Image (cartoon, rainbow, N blue to C red; front, side):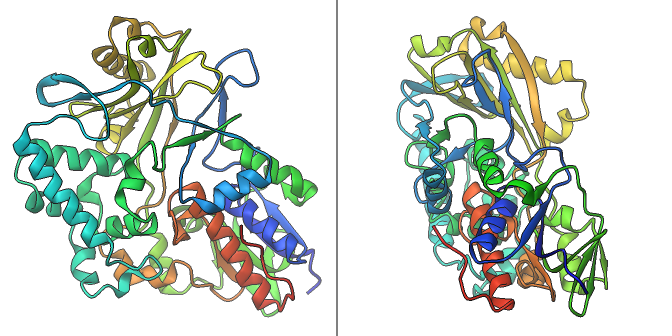
Length: 450
C-alpha cells in the first residue's frame, strides 16, 4: 500500500488537534480530517458585540487549577486567561421560590438540611477516593456500584427532600443527565479523575475558575494554525477499512488512524472488518448528555451594582445553574443559564420562543425586572458535555474504551483518565493516543507532554 501519510486523525477538536501536534513533534506525517467547516469540536466562539473581544463561548469554556495539560498548552500558545466573575453575593432559590443571598460556597440552609447534605456529600467524597481513574472496573465493589444509579444512592444517603434535590442539581450540572441515568461508579470515577468532587463544582479554586481571553475556541484555532494544510475541513469520514499494512479512509491511505470522536459518534462509522464486540457494544452504551446553554445579553452587567456575583442556583429551575458570563472587558453584560438533563430533553423540541420565555422568567425571578429586557436572548447550543456510560457499562465494556483495535486508536475527552469530559481530558487523551501510535510505529521521539 502506498500511504498518503503516516497517520490520519479524525476530528479537529481539542483532542484530535493535540494528537496531531504530538504526532508531528514525534516525526510522523499527519493529516486531520474534520467533518465541520471549522475546528474546535465542542468549543465555539460567538460574538455579542462590535469589538473583537466581545466574545462568549457557545460550547465549553472554563479552565481551572489542576488542569495542567490545557493550562500548559494555553501558555505555550500565548493565550491569556481571566477569572470568572465572582465578586458579590450569590443567590440560592429554594423550594417554593424563596430567594436567599449568601457568600462562600454553601448557602445558608436549614441546619437539618445542611447536616443531611453534608453527610451525603462527605460520604460521596470518601467513596471517590477509592476509585482508580485508570481502571475504575477494578474497584472491589465495581459491579455493585456500576449497577447502582446515583438516584438510588441519593435516596439512601440523604433523608430530606431539599438535600436530595440539591445533590441531584449537582449531578445535572456536572453530567447534564438525570441521577437515574448515571451509574454510581461513573460518578465516583469522574470525581476521582478530577482529584475531587469540589474541583468539579467550585468556581474559585475549581474547574470553573477561569475563562479564555478571546474565547475557548481560540485554543483550537491556534493549534490548527500551526498545523496549516495538515488540517482539512468539511471532510466527513464515513468508513475505516483496515488492511494488513495500513488503513483506508475514503480515497486516503495511512499507516494508522486516531478516532478523536465521542464514542456515540465513533459508533456511526462503518468499520471493515467490524469492530470487536466489546468495542462495538461500548459505543452503543455511551450516549451524550442533554444540555441547552442559554445566554441573555444586556448593555451592562447591572447585577454587579446590586452587589451580586451573577452566580445563582435554583432548585425550582428549570435553569438551575446560572453564571455571569460577561466578556473580559466588562461589557456587554451576559447572564448564562443551563437547561440540563430532563429539562433540556423537554424544552429541546419546544419552540425557540418558549425556551427564551422560561430563561428570561428565571433570570427575572433571580435578578429583578431589569433582567426581563435583554438586548438579545438566544439558546446557543444543545447536546454535551460528554458521553456518559449507562449503568453497567464500565464493568462490562470499560476495558475497550482506550484499547486500540489493531491500527485504530481512540482519543476524545471520554477516553481521558484525568479531567474526563473537560478540555484537559481531551488534550491528555489526544497526546496518549499519539504516543501509542508513535510507539507502535517505532518512532524514536516520544510524544511531548506538557
